Length: 252
Figure 1 (cartoon, rainbow, N blue to C red):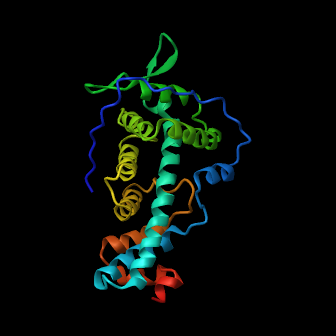
Figure 2 (figure 1 turned 135 degrees about the vertical axis):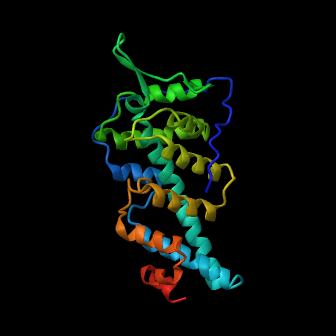
Figure 3 (figure 1 turned 180 degrees about the vertical axis):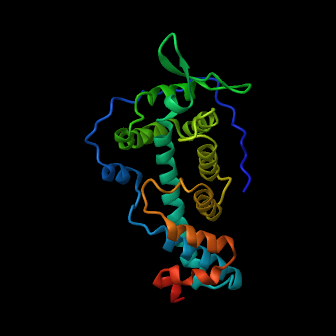
């Protein structure tokens, strides 16, 4: 689906932002996932097969409650999980901003964020967030940043996500961030601000992963089977999804 790449205008006043404190290496990923209410045991290939099979069945039987109710429940579950997951991992990806989207000053021997994206200046809020993530780019820092990003989001609301879009639209290197993460963040913002329905949001999240193969791989086990399910759906071979579905959907 096409993405609106325009960044919403930021407020003139600079929001209060508490800089991220030094990392605590002992922080366990399970603790962070509980804070974000994420279930790492989900089988995404099964849920994707259920999701697209139920959508196809609803097209054939639009008034059948045995199809409508499970589709509604599954969609809501996936929307909650995907929105929390995307939010958390967006924060984790931002920790690479100084190394990947920064400007090196050989005289000051430090990395500084770019001041503009083309003719569009970066907001003070985005600069504050970049400064908060400085020095936290190591793999061992990720769990800590995931937790701290939740505090940032709770404080700034979706404005923090608009700042993330600004940052991802900077010239990043090939390894992290960049356009794919700007698109993912825009999708999350559109969902949280009511521009996307839950069903469209879930479908788009699966599409983002299918196109990039990087979006849903930070918590859940994803691999060839999920790609195969998404390939079958893209090729309109919904009947072939049956063997991947859960027993509950197979028995409808």
